[in-house]
Length: 405
Image 1 (cartoon, helix red, strand yellow):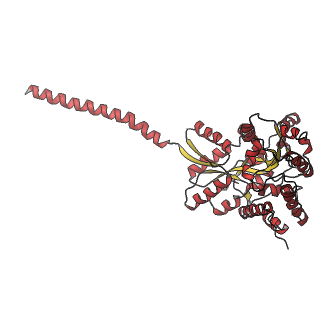
Image 2 (tube, helix red, strand yellow):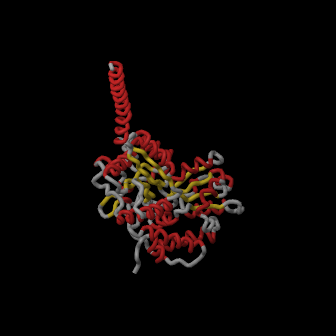
Image 3 (cartoon, one colour):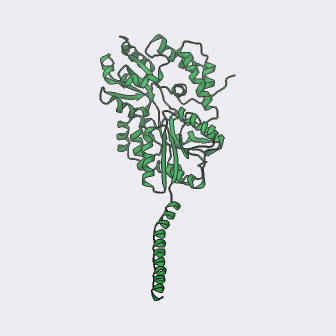
């Protein structure tokens, strides 16, 4: 009997010990698991078309445990905008998206998906942004995106090819007549194109039409621009028609001596030319005021938690140190105005001539018809390059956004 009691006692004791051990094990594992679940990082999906911007966004995610940043890159703004429009229609959108001043801001604002930023940005940050760049993302008295960088039209030139063709350097490219003459010398033996032009031609035509800061475009100015384009293709034969997608490749491989493009192409050209020949860039001829191409970041409304994290991510891209790093990687002018000494300013402008243009920018605002006009202008360019008749009225209506009586 005594032995049975002992066995029963030991059995109960064993159960107590095992139960206590099991509780301790469960508590030591379940507790931290529950804690980890409560601090699970917020995932932010970010869409960009500037590939050089992606590493900075991913770096932010790695340095903030509470946020996981997933970056998707697109080959162009056009592709991103079209896919974003489709994503909005099915309510499956990213939280942060890179936008361009070329078109789309007013459309996105009208759709109601963008988070208005006017009262969400600090006064210090708003005041530090270049006003002529910030204007491109202001619509109906509200801020819908913040610029992080910008670029202007420039002419890149192959120094070796110019010298070989008898054109000494870019100093002879100050006027369109000088550029056309250099182009004819380059194309004289039909081995090279004198001039190639990037695909964002509607933006380049805007700059031609508003080259002196005009508020409106006259019929004579529109006729002058149409005539210049036609002469370079038909009379001078220095520019290939309908070949804009191949322009960068033609310049990089040495098949073209001059390249009319955005100043932010510099980093890409340096990478792919890789010292095969010497090249430099100069201002677009006869241009006093520029319409910049502004790149910015917008926040799409998701949830209170994600909106807050997205705003912090966007603000981090505008910190002074980050602005300098992004500018170097993307060849864009920083969006923040940073006071500097005259010596510092001169030094920066010598290394990057495009920076000398930041005080010669036209201030313009978004319009809901920007995308429609962009498409109309592309069709006009095609018609001009195919030697079809194009009226000054069509140019002014589509490129300048003006109706004529």
